[in-house]
Amino acid sequence: EYQWKGPFYFIQGADPQFGLMKAWTHGDTNNGDDEWGEEIKLAEQAVQAINKLNPKPKFFVLCGDLVHGMPGSRWKKSQEQDLKDVLKNTDQDIPLVFVSGNHDIGNTPTKETIDDYCKNWGDDYFSFWVGGVFFLVLNSQLYFDSSKCPELRQAQDAWLDEQLAVAANQKCKHIIVFQHIPLFLSKPDEDHDYFNLDKSVRQEIMEKFHKAGIRAVFSGHYHRNAGGSYKGLEMVVSSAIGCQLGQDTHGLRVVVVTEEKVVHRYYSLTDLGSHGIEKELLDMLAKQK
Image (tube, rainbow, N blue to C red; front, side):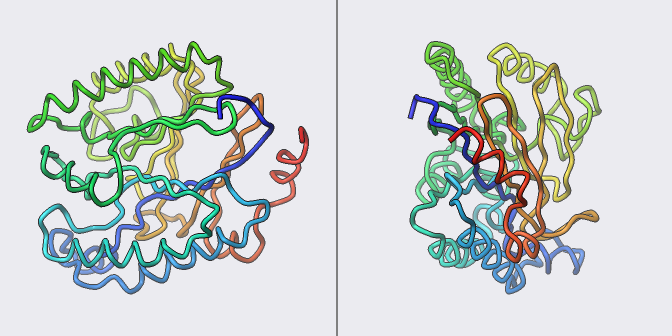
């Protein structure tokens, strides 16, 4: 779909993270994740809300931390199976796009943990087109700590440069990136911590994205809504479908893409399920038909 066909929208969700809610309340985030009934209900609620939307979204992207169990941990396989069982009920006309998070491949991923993820959920980085808009899915863990698989980080870097060259030649309307870990939470020069990328890596990526004309980066990981911008590149951090670490509600982000801009709004699962998308955004979709 290299050609612009008019405005459309997609749904972004993040961190269903089956198992974190119990682990978090018990103060044992390393292994207290033997129950995830609450998360199953929230994920079901998300799928039901998405299925009711009219018009249908072009796709539903999940920005990482699909489940809480780290690679090799006791409950991971059961958590993944339960999530798949919920997601199978997504309307078959709405493609699912998966992004790898630190809990999916490990804080310090290895070739083995990434291979395992790819077998389960699909490639850890790839690109796709929707109506003249170019989307890139990145494995942000390789930017966070690639010490055990440096060659995979190099491969993603080389691939990314090729993709950006393709995008430049195709004269796409927008380029949008999905990754799990935000580049930054509110300011491009904020200090590095668990929830963002190291400053030197961040600067290099932001500059590369800015030069390529990337419009927005959507991520999760923070379990709160946040964001900011760098030279016209918008960093959008969405809160979780699952466990909330701040004041936000369990929710999803609706992202409308028009010829000129990318507009987004975060909805609680309850609001999206009962009221759908508000008129202002629907009007944007109808405008240039």
